[in-house]
Image (cartoon, rainbow, N blue to C red; front, side, top):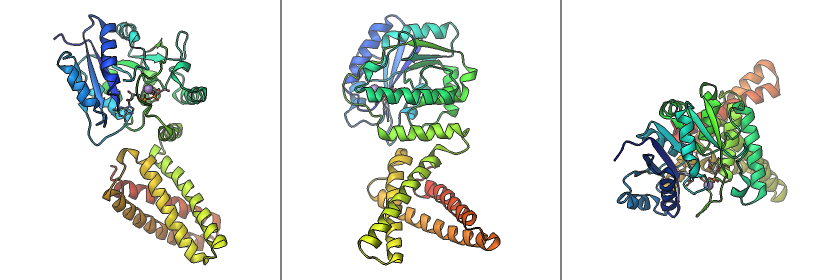
Length: 363
Ligand code: GDD
Ligand code: MN
């Protein structure tokens, strides 16, 4: 077997039916160009890893990395890039939405000196509408793209593209910076050091998914908004804290709704109603944080209940500290707003920092 010129990384979650198709299509396009294909599977229940390994018999250039206990597109892409044997690496969806016939052209661009080649849906010759089922989604994607562009500083017309190629050097560098959360690895690379890279774009038509369904739903959108805001603040406020804060606001809504329902609707005494509402708000905050903020470390089974317990405890300690600090400040300067705000912000930071470590053990 020849040393590969190009490594193609295919992140795949539940793509068992698509893997043989995409591998065959890549083979047809690449012809004599020596390449390897690395499928990065996150232990998909549909047997993506098994199907990939079955191919290896006839196609030794195909490999599979099966990650257990982890989920996430960016992390999967990174891991594939780091395992690449070739000096040039490409990332591509496994569901046939990306146009593999562009690979040789992208490879040429790298050989001519580019560090990063981006498959773009938004330059002449590119197209994205066909890949989206409804036009509403296409509009959403355009909006997200403009926002992302604004933040990344217009290094590319398509910072949300999942189809790109880069040199090993650029990949190695990226590995030290990019966030393993979420699904916007290209966005991350370009926004952090787009100015140091020679970037070339190649248009492609975003096709319809062959089999299965998209994994990028509501959750990913929310995480992306968190990432954007975080970048917007120059990374001072971590993305996860942003999400935690967002969840906190919904908790406030839950608390107030429960409080009014219990007092006005069911005639509970204020103090009792306030206790129950606080407990409900903490519970809903825990569930939402578990689903959204800490989706990558989601607690299930007994760990869920143990996590809920630690969450209650930490939040209660936070609330006690909040009240005592706010009271001391109030005694000093008599400003209700200032004292209340300091207490609340401290409370939020404390809860965030401690539950991150204790409840979700995210270090
Ligand atoms: N290993 C792994 N782990 N792979 C994943 C995961 C994961 O958690 N989530 C998604 N993938 C794989 C999918 O199996 C697919 O091969 C690829 O990543 C893209 O996921 P899709 O679920 O098909 O995403 P999409 O088609 O909705 O989004 C595409 O278009 C976006 C632009 O609108 C992707 O190319 C995005 O990167 C792109 O931003
Ligand atoms: Mn897709």
